[in-house]
Image (tube, rainbow, N blue to C red; front, top):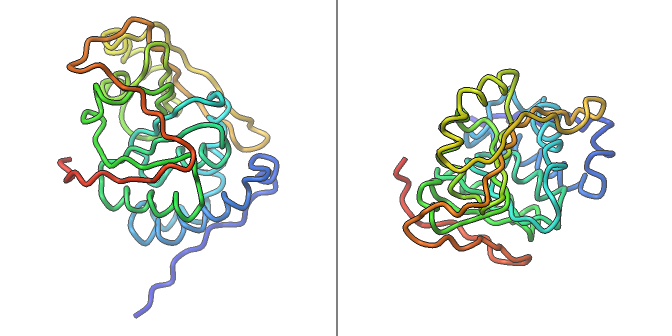
Length: 243
């Protein structure tokens, strides 16, 4: 018996202004999310009709907080939100999609290949496995964990002066206040809640921004900066998932 998968809803009129020349890639990504993404359980079937408003456009707003030439690590990338949206919109940014679960990492690898993204690669790993070996300019996370727990995973992945961008909801300020002791312990110099994107375009989001101080944290081995090169091979680690 065949099962009819839901289809992504039509792209809103504002999507052409938001994605510009990357619109075709965004439409292809939406089709992947509504098809294989739902089929493999990365998204629920009810998400398909609202992929644009709830996911693609929502993730587009955070892109304005990233600078060209930076290396961005999407922690707990899942279905590629916001990492793949960032890679589509910002070809001058290098994106590392970190995901511990095999089926999600496989989907991400296939999506990177099918979308022809030469500025993205996939690492199948837990954040803790990368501590001391990877150091990036920005760590971005969406719906991964409460901020205090997220900080323990993300802050050691940042270079001195790097930033954590945590997409949060209405309780962002409350989460930030509760997490400040943990942030301080992991070298945060300053932090705050900012609004990114545009309500008119549907890209508005609330983001907790945490700046890591310039002091090098002690690690077992000196961290080497992750610098995926344009045109590099998309690789998925063969480590067994221990989560």
